[in-house]
Amino acid sequence: MNERTLTCIVCPNGCLLTVDAAPDGTLNVGGNMCPKGVKFARDEIIDPVRTFTGTAATSFKDHPVEPVRTSGDVKIKEIARLAEYVNSLVLDRRYSPGEVIEENVLGTGAALIATGDMKEDTL
Amino acid sequence: MRYDVIVIGAGPAGLEAARAAREAGKTVLVIEREARAGGILKQCVHDGFGVIRYGEKLTGPEYAYRTLTAAKAAGAEIKTGTFVTKISKTADGFKVETTSRAGMASDESLSLILATGCRERTPRQVDIHGTRPAGVLTAGACQNFVNLKGLLPGKRVVILGSGDIGLIMARRLTLEGAEVIGVYEAKSTPSGLERNLRQCLDDFGIPLHLKHTVTDVYGQKRVEAVAVSAVDDNMTPVGEKTIVPCDLLVVSVGLIPENELHESLGLKTAPATKGIDVDQYMMSADVPGLYSVGNALHVHDLVDYVSESAATAGRDVGKRRERNLIKTETEGLQYVVPQYIDASALGEKTIFYMRSPKYYKKAVVRLYADGELKQTKRVTNVRPPEMLRIPFSFEAEDSVRIVLEEDGV
Image (cartoon, rainbow over all chains, first blue to last red; front, side, top):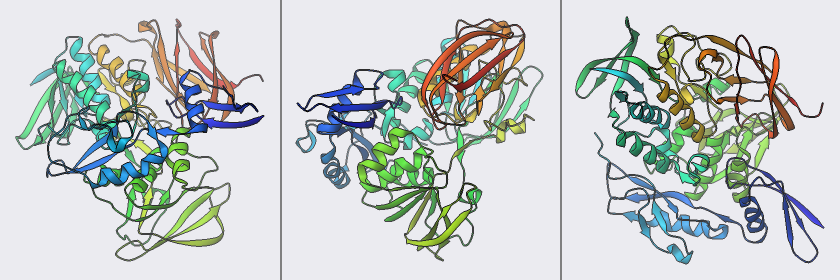
């Protein structure tokens, strides 16, 4: 038996999870307050995932950067590549929160979506 | 103009209080000094907001957008780019004087909600002195530069303090191409949420040095290096100083409620929360009709609870004339909000927000009313950086007492 402890980052409860790896490879998860903890612990051990968040430059002076994120989790090893890609973008139209900027960004299976409101009037 | 309620601050607290008051049929004016509503959430581009309230992992701008959209849909009038210069008591309410591009104005209301948020403790407040080279920033100022202005304020970064915003910025600066050398924390335990230590530092291999602090900043025009040193249990530097070359020092050493406006009304700042004392509807214990919500009342760890308590205040506007206030006595707690209970208006549930002064693997919170034990709630993994939120159902006439202690002693 090989036991590991992890802090679940799915929600702010931050459950302290224990993961037991049985010799046959099955993982037993404990300490979770909800089923999401089990999935988190398994992903975390096998292939961890995160939601990417960042900002992309725009061509608008009143809104020089637009916050963006992936529509869902992507593999942690894709994060650096995504950051580099997003940092190379210049958005030339105004987005609203939730609007898709690019589907299946870098083949991750997740869409890159806008999260800030660029259409709002400013003074 | 005359309103039922004026709300100062259009962050998540102010907007949600405004929505709730408006939906209860009140006329509402929200005053915001920034050009856009949404508050600090606008610059919190990371996710994790709204898991409790919406069951979704939203970013700050998305959470702000939802709250703003709901407040607008409810019909709240929001004046942005408007700065409050003075608030005062009138015979039956409050007068709020403002200045904006449209000029000076004065509005009156029966109730007033302070939703002015909090400020960051500055480097000077943690005894970092010397010359003032460019490149010493609070974590929030750094976040503003990177996430709103699209500027990278440094390439080789030292972070002092393990508060959440510092941890979030460690990740953010790394993803923007800067090198974060390490996070130094004078205390023996981290200040930020466990989940942020994991996903912001561990994921990127950024070291956290507990019981270490920055003692000196070097550089004339620009930061060139800092000196770091181990500290003892009294946070006094001990041993050799290590010089760490860097061009940016980010300081994340805590938040303090903005208290200038309530002090101008003659209200005392409570030492434990740095906000005012309120009842369970967030109404000031001293000035009827005055409310304080969100981080202006006490610094929250989650915006979801800011929205919850702000809505409680908004719904209460104009409802109560007489109050029977009882002080909430505490034992084993850093603080509890509400500090007072209006015993004449106890609802089905009264939600207490509290912080523990120490770590407990297992603890128990007990509520006593009129000297009798009414309810017991078990809690696990209690940490000072994480607020406890506990709803209690009880009746009380002359005393309320909340006790936190280790479970099983």
